[in-house]
Image (cartoon, rainbow, N blue to C red; front, side, top):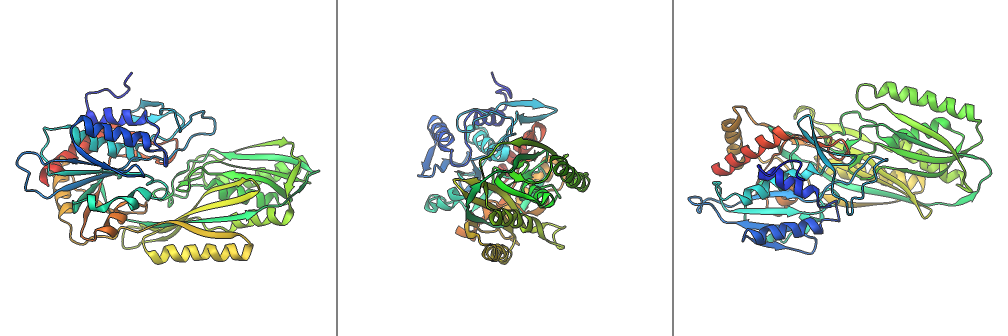
Length: 473
């Protein structure tokens, strides 16, 4: 049974998308859905070995001599869920519902980033009553991880030199520039020894988490940083396991450590309560309430002491959060780091950090800091998944038309601002320096977390605005 109804095509398509598993690296089924859509609507299309899809729609009558416009969205989503959720992102449809005017998913991310953009593009392709230039609808994969889809597009298949990116998350605000980024991965082979001490598992949770670009400046707690701080306070412990974070580009909401200790149970709990109390005060106005659960467990082995200390010290010293901001652009975050994932698997410790910067020099300098830290502390360090920033274009005809269309549609002025998130716009601009790009979207809150939701009224207005903009182009 439909939750969102079939009266509005973009809502219908959005709901259909939520029924198809499409986390990063699992986009094949949604890619095939897009191809079937193109065939059903007699539209030409192209695809490739990473499941990108480009669908071509001819210009409407009277717009044949207008310059082609590209509409672009990514089809993958961040797979995040609450620890008590049994959802299997590899095969389960999202369990969506409507509450207080918002579409939400039970216990998981919603994928409105960027399912909303995909749905709006499909609605445009499906509607032959609209006025628009020739359209190249570009659907990319792996945006939430490596942006490999955008990097591997066959750019000879793209003829448009004007683009509307539909990966925005705030109605009435158009991004004019976005951050570049790089990931840094640090690893260490672990040695274990037999354990004879009492062992515990400490699980911390209750934090808001969120998008590591958009929310990185909001002073939200990073569960991995906090659990390393707690471990330092407990002091007389030796690690057995540490784990936290699900996605490198999401601020971790939960983490746990398993450790042995010679502390008495009373002393351990007293130290724990003291540091948690301080953290709660610090986060009182910026985040959810930090909660914890401490349970005694049985373990037969533990990490040898020097490696345990090195892991705790590394995370404790690791920079995370806001690094630089712009006084010129209303305090826009221009450089940041996010400790996204920590895990131990097969006696290998792994730490994954996402870095973003408006300047390439910011990104490279922060990465060099971590390479230096890794060298000093005995961790193997490498970088991965670089992507370019999208620089501001001083003169933009599409931007001018967008502002005019928004004023006409709403009576309000469009707000133009940079964004600290990474957008594929930078890759397109790198390939086509002359590409005239704008980025827009409806109100989507708490992306990359199970609290993600999209405002239905904003979805409606954003689609109506897109129609007006296309008619002006």
